[in-house]
Image (tube, rainbow, N blue to C red; front, top):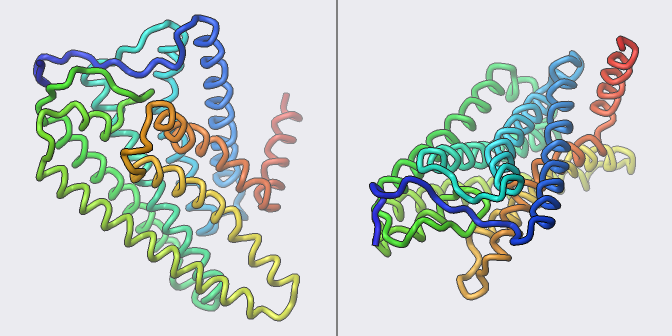
Length: 310
């Protein structure tokens, strides 16, 4: 038996037992990590440098890219380090910091995706009021609210979780420190504070989900009323990237946290966590850039100018 005061480090899940597979996993993680850095970095550069991209949609896309960079930089470097040096340890404070920042960025991403849904709703359903409802000040306030909500959510859950006594060892069945994995080590089977925080967070997340569903119902109804086929295609093309990113994020994260215990396994938990914490941040820039001509044009100009300067 041990408690949190005697735990100096945690043991993360090892991806493989053999050295060859560990190095292979390191290379795979490195490739995904560099792809995420490059893709999100290019989006941030394009929106920052392209003055014609200084619109609400691209402003929120820039914030989404920042949250993707933050989440993948929180988890993957430590996993790569462990695979390269054949270790699984992470310090107690390092684990707490990792759990906080991961929850902070993931929560902020969900709120940003909700705001981006509102942006699409106003753009298609209330185009005449777009400039009024989504002015620069309103956009800044909404983005600040998303980041502040994510910070508060991460802080509350991390502070409460790491204040609980831990009696079930220090081995985590995950590549990174995650709140549900820490709770499995807790002495108490039920904690009222954490239960209350979970109910609050789930209520807020469900409210966002209901808003997203309602918005897209209204969006699809408005698009189907557009008389021209070209107009419908243009309207759908502005929504499809956001809908694809949202679906990928929600389906993997929701199933990871709400799946029944009867089908839970270490390999399934690992696969799901890799999908929403590693693969999704790397795919988001690709999904958005493939469907957006303005963004692709700006990226081509940036790369051409960079090539000419060299």
